[in-house]
Length: 165
Image 1 (cartoon, rainbow, N blue to C red):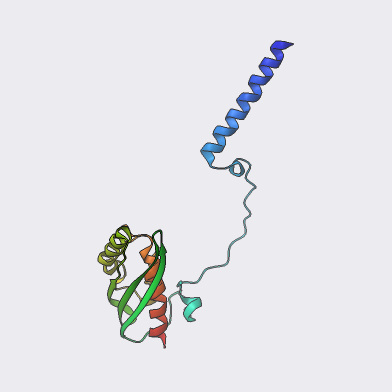
Image 2: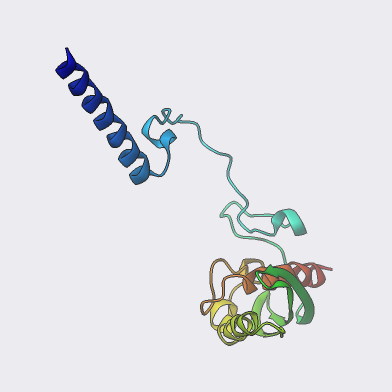
């Protein structure tokens, strides 16, 4: 009888260990017992991230039919960094609806934030020059800077609105 209790205890302990390891590998208990996915489709998202902001229309091919005034526009974009609130100044030139030049400047009293701002400044031109203005949203990092694009995108929304008027 005592041997049966020992075997049963070892069996239960083994099951618990397998569950713990399984949870650690998959990341959560729910992924082990995941409900089946439905086959419903999500509604399509806008072609441009700014369509809802600026009211751009899309053609049947999905391209944005919005036109923008040529010129140089300036805006400030704010964002939050681990060191606190930061901002970048953006000067962007639009020609024929495309970004033809961009200059980003910013400074921070925090050395780390300042380094990332400088990295972003040196890499942004190669990312957006030549793109249509309404497709110049920066997604992801630029030269290792992952938060400065948030400030740039904030300023870009303002510039899109200026160029639309």
